Image (cartoon, rainbow, N blue to C red):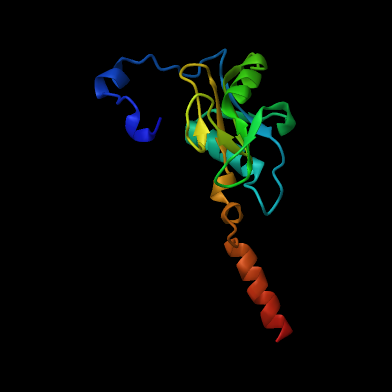
Length: 164
């Protein structure tokens, strides 16, 4: 299946959907880190937490890291890099949903693949009304594509200048 093959969504469909909202009992968003977030190679978990809290106007907490070995993975044929299966992530999140969680969003520097689709990858995915989702930042890093990060290039330029 390709994006062009997907069934469309109408405005009427969108309006008719029941949209959950935080309330007294379900009042927090939790970020669930999956795998490592190395400084200089990943977005700051603290910054992600602060941005989510402000953007969604909800109290946000970060949970302890879950190792990615807990998930089914495959190697992407185009990139030769490991991808973790999003449905495994959803299962773990739903099983461990904190009692006051409006939602839990897994964040990771691992590449993601959806289960029942032939997509090569997804940046993120969330099943409707399950209060869980996953988002990958790995393809936002130029090094994923073998390129130099801007700040790495700037550091290299400064080092060359000091050696001259």
